[in-house]
Length: 402
Image (cartoon, one colour):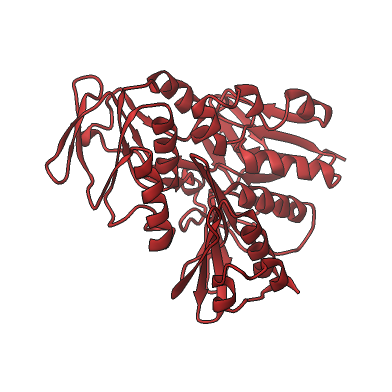
């Protein structure tokens, strides 16, 4: 009887987790993991934090050594770009090479939203924070006294600003929206991080965007939408990411803010699955796409189980984190749809609790791991504490779990 062949395209956190889970669940067939970067699968979150700062060596980014894959008979192919997939023929093409599969999983992740060439997007000295090669190219620019423009006031932009400020650079950050973090957090959280960055010398310009980058071959300045002209040494764009669903779309798979899957992780094509940043899945009456390491791991592992014959839905328990200066932000839940925010301030520790009516939706915890862990457990259990209770800094949060 011929071996079953499984191919996984995308060697990031989701892809690596998926192939490991397949082997751990007893899959004994031929298993190939394909990644387009030369490096072994690695952690992305530290790229804009400890790795850019120089506090984390390159080898500690790697999720698992080559020997790990070899021992488990996982054919890891790095620096290999899949050009097309053909769900009808059940093949994937890498240049002149065509590989057949019985089951295919797409874990292609996301890609940065790039600036148009017309406003300087092709200039040297413009960097993105997405791949290891992006950070390696940027690191020589991070030198005391240099001038950098951060374009975008989301978490990636703020983390890059924190690294640059800590290294003694002159940092300006522009955010076209009315406030930083407007898409993902409350005004209270925006206020907290605006104050944090301003205390570290970052010039934050809200309601102001980039009109164009200036320079011949590389960035030498920027013109902002309010007419301000800045002299610069380089720029970093943190203007969001897009699901990398290009292979799927070209192959005719259904896409809706990413590769559309059902609650088991199946795409619109037979025997083709998807997981991680690239995939959108049903949640209640809507479709959801989450950009986080926990989602990449959890969804990939559930898809692997379902590829092995399981039949369990993927139900996310969202959580995220961000490191900026000496502040660790931990987020539990999803704040969309909240109608009030309760602030719990214990001095060094602070948390913002999001409610819709009496129902707890999410918590932003700044240097408050206890609030994060309690909130995470409350959300998992479907419990909602009283708003007045959590707002009282004298309340023992652990008592809310009883």
